[in-house]
Image (cartoon, rainbow over all chains, first blue to last red):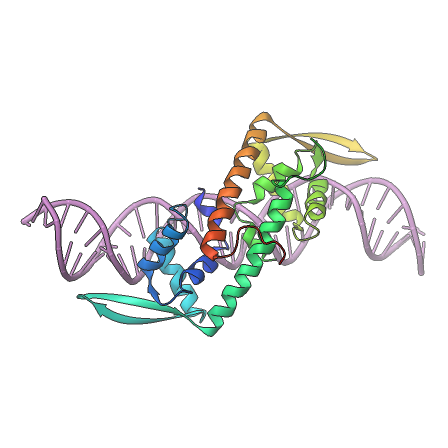
Length: 112
Length: 112
DNA sequence: CTCCATAGGTTGTATTGCTACCTATTGCGA
DNA sequence: TCGCAATAGGTAGCAATACAACCTATGGAG
């Protein structure tokens, strides 16, 4: 899949991956890979900066912990993040509807 | 709609708008606006450079004509463009499926 | 001891759509 | 006659952002 197609939709995906409960960055990446059957396999250079951005924006809250000698940064959705996720979902559906209509992927009673 | 969400999908939309037959740039813009009920209303600064890019890539072919004293550049899908459109459609469906799965929204919202 | 998987991170780059602007014609209203 | 809107094409420069490439570190497998 063309990776750059994600532009503008990444934040929603990350937020959604955190909806089930707190996760650290690597786990977010793995969760996305699994729920999409490998179709969305984000490079770490995409995940971590994006999580930082979301944290700066107040949509997620991070905290350090140490598990087995390894430091982990666990992220959690904030209330703001939760409503942002909701907005992302609505936005996605609108967007998907519009693009699907424009691409003509759904049978329209015209032409051909 | 967040405009930048289009990133990576614009080309397919433009190609699709040209599928029914040759159109000039402005008409492509209008066609997209109509098929998406105003949801995708591209600024001309997006349309024209994108059409040039598609032409350079050999996906569309442009030709000048003069209609009512106004010069028009009419674009037409090439064979390459047609198969690119087909690939864009497949790609879009894969992408949409993946994002929908990751967002945890149901595949095609039955407007429920 | 080395390598891999896990885990977190940074830097720099490339793509690309958008804002803001420009040119030009036709036609309309003041 | 002048100014303006709509149509039509265009450019320059900006901003956002995902990615490639790279770095650090630990624990366990070989």
